[in-house]
Length: 335
Ligand code: COA
Image (cartoon, rainbow, N blue to C red; front, side):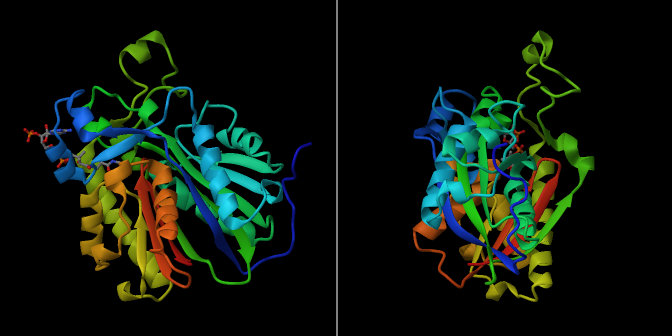
């Protein structure tokens, strides 16, 4: 048997993020490139979303390649060899294949010897994964977990649908979580509302609509979205989850140093800022470069904010996201 499902090691008070990393495809697709594919314009996309360009995974590379790249960088930043990982959790809705889990392929690519599984909560995937990873570490099940958010949405997007193709991009972000006596992850809050599932989904490819010539011809395997519906729920629910995190930790907006929220749309984040009284200047923003990379967006932003010196030791971070489901959540982190 490879690895061990339960390594033990005693309970820890907290889990902490020990290192961050990312995997960013080299291929850039700008709004001007999109003008040549669908009836849209750079001006419209920038005004409505804040996005200027996104990255597209090169042909021949896969989700697990990108995830492993992010994972390697996070392990290096944490100073931890892959052999000391107890688990790899990959949050994604665009795995290499439906079965087996993307995480087991990442385990092989990293040369790790540990438990490995996927989690799917769409754009809220990283927050859900962080909550599960934190609980496993505090329960004493594991000492070190590699948590990766990765998406290759370019292969799930209908490039003839201007309603969706302008929004999404590819990327991976990762963190190494470690059991600790020092405060790190202070709280996580998770929510879901399955009644809204129809507002953002990929209808084909599952049990309801397996792949057939007819399902492919009718484009059922691409992302379908009601943009306005998603927008309204995103502002309301990300704001509420953020306020719940503040209230739970008895903190006020001025006691938060950075908000690292899911980068779906700049206007959504402006709405969240207004509702929560968290100033937009505290929101770390990189949506202009990458678009919406779903579960990868928060760990990519975290990695960039750490490496460019924005996030400093001792600071308090609020993380929050909403995605298809809807599933959403927040986390309060002491860096
Ligand atoms: N380029 C140019 N024009 C476009 C366009 C595009 N890509 N998409 C839509 N339009 C047009 C519409 O046809 C409409 O034209 P009309 O006024 O002549 O009818 C006009 O622009 C406004 O469209 P509308 O759909 O009302 O725009 P919007 O302000 O709601 O913005 C989104 C659209 C998709 C950017 C916005 O709804 C959104 O970001 N929603 C959230 C999506 C999201 O974040 N999803 C992932 C969540 S994890």
